[in-house]
Length: 346
Image (cartoon, rainbow, N blue to C red; front, side):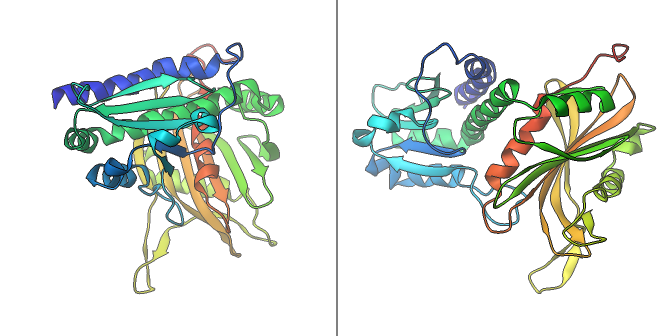
């Protein structure tokens, strides 16, 4: 098992180090553009393995539900073909997972390659001497496989934002919050105040938005779950609903199986992004005095240069269609933030 764990750690490190470089230095490679939709994985696997326990484990892993969405949506949409069908445009798919069971493989392992036939592309070759050893490996290190694929999608978002961003929003955030941030093209400013901005990307079928806000950091309790929810509700009032007097609020009750309501609080955990600690909260929002709602994720940290709490709060409204592909790029915004060191702010 130690060998398996080391391999799992290796592919995560490879994706974060080599993958990031690959996805940000593609313009001179003359690669064909990738095919397929975001969060779609093309699995190349023969019938015997796919229809057995190994295929079942792969499907369960890749299609597990995304947490904290209003309806069940899989982490990835899976397309499966056999090795004999892997040709033509299929070799240019954005995310490829090849399953190779062969006696020539000495141990189960996953080999990551980037930009093999298209860019920005990731090709993972999962090889093992037997289907049984592959299944054992996957049960132990499946999370690492998911992580590598998620990093590949995230790096595409980051690379796009670095190249195509909204300067007016970048400058506004820098002036208000003393942070550097790249906002991807498509977002427009909706409103602002001294310590708040709200921007959104409007689609015919959905709204993808975020708001940033700041307030003084006074004590450790300033970052408690209850305090963060209270501050979220304070600033969310600036986001109007569809009718007069309506505004966004955080959902604090949800229906149970019997139709009654029970208390609900957003999830709360610490995450590290680009070496800085953030508090991530996931939950649901709705509109006071009207009927709208959806999922949200927020990231909160302390700007050491200003001693101010800084929050990026992201939400999706998509009542008729899936929310995963709108929410995921919003989750990546936190990776586009850079803070000055103490004493560097103007």
